[in-house]
Image (cartoon, rainbow, N blue to C red; front, side, top):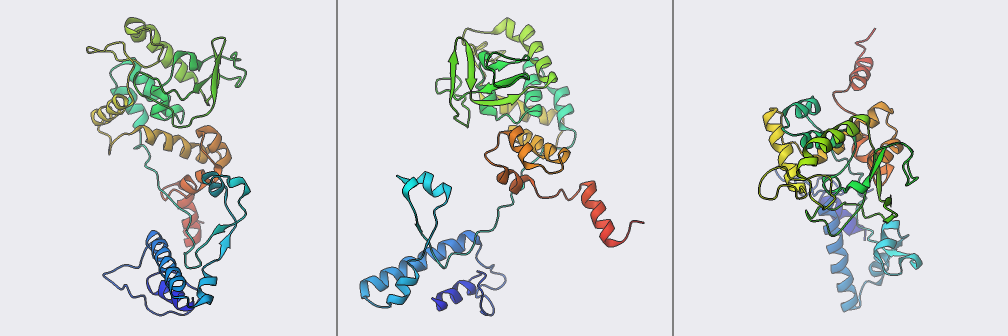
Length: 322
């Protein structure tokens, strides 16, 4: 087992023993985390098969039979996972580092510029709703009018402030569907459950502007919120791909850098909430309906290299401030 640990160190793993120079030297690069995981799995499989088929080296075979406690993800994936007490482990596998993804944000000044370059009240409402919430584009284009509770103390009793319910439906005509499939139900014409998002006054204003102008002229009987405003399918539900195309074209007209995507709005509002709450990941989780506060901290918790706080901290360390 010590020889195998030395081998893992030679290909790039961090091992608690002297191992010298890695085999993969420039211009080659040491194995990354994923490649090291694959190498450890291959070594374990090969030597377990060799020891079992040849009847040799029982010590190595026992060393590979180590176990670990099951995680919550392990229990969810396994059949009868709630009764599992141990999971097989590989002593050669390196520890996975915490992922630090850098989500793509909106360009500076993108929100007001997009508001000025869109062509219809529907497009303006879409930009406003994406900017003021963390809605995904599938959930937005899958909204029905009954999902909107844009007044105080709605009958659902789940949120006192104006809000909306994002409900996963399989039968939408435009094939739009919410990513999170939380339980919901319709009782006496009132929607309860689903993902709940707070609605800002600007969102409500853009909604009434759209409903009293374009929606009133072209709406069909399907009951969905976003509709097509031109072409042979005028009045039919608007698809998520069409909304993405609208944002892409609006970004080009506004001469914004990069490609404007709906997910950039979700990243941006989460990052902005963390900024105004001094990094409170629990508030950002609730605002964005994220799966966990830990995931928010891992993705958005790293400092902005251009923020005033980051610059001030460096100047203080460098001794440039009085």
